[in-house]
Length: 225
Ligand code: HEC
Ligand code: HEC
Image 1 (cartoon, rainbow, N blue to C red):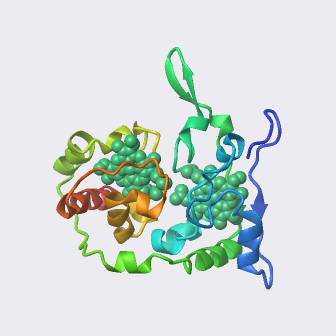
Image 2 (cartoon, rainbow, N blue to C red):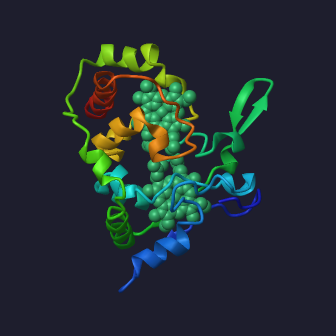
């Protein structure tokens, strides 16, 4: 977590206790690195920006609670080059290299605290109306064609991995997207990323709803393969 090279970089570990005030805990220990309102983060200095994670103020519109519960106890890297890749990638004669040591070693919560924090984060739902407007019926699709669509025709693979170790590193990996994210969030975010996260580096790719639903179905299909 930004510790100087050679320092102990084991993650911070938090334990729940009787009567933890979850909102206060999150405010004190999480919000330094996670935006709490639209536009947060943009004004941070590059040093701080390197530690930032994605906004959490709409966590309840975005994540699946079961996923949060697991991940907070055993965080695995989602963004191979961090949330803000320019601060973690170095140009070398052999090409761009991720400076692994600069990536945040995420804090870990024990089971009790993870449960409370996950439940609290799920109450943060400022954009519930937006999700309710989505008309998406998830279904599985033939894998080969859907993969070709994701990789070749839509070019998503330039920034995202759909198989561990295969694909770009500037965006979050998407092989666990289906277990991580609510289906309606995926559809809504792909259509208008900036509406969710102003200043996001995910581009708007002009597609109709059928095309977006097909891509979401692909994420479901690879999750259940
Ligand atoms: C030192 C900065 C820092 C602190 C403190 C921190 N986080 Fe994070 N968080 C990050 C970064 C960076 C990521 C992106 C990790 C990745 O992509 O692998 C992240 C990712 C996450 C994610 C996954 C989100 C996603 O979609 O990628 C959740 C959930 C989360 N943090 C919750 C919390 C909670 C709850 C706390 C407080 C206990 C907390 N974080 C404290 C930096 C931090
Ligand atoms: C130029 C790079 C780039 C391309 C191309 C791209 N994305 Fe992204 N995508 C990103 C970045 C960066 C993020 C993280 C944005 C954020 O957190 O605000 C993202 C986020 C996402 C998310 C949300 C994941 C999460 O855990 O928050 C989904 C879903 C997604 N992209 C799907 C797609 C699909 C489907 C395509 C192809 C149609 C695509 N992306 C093409 C860069 C890209």
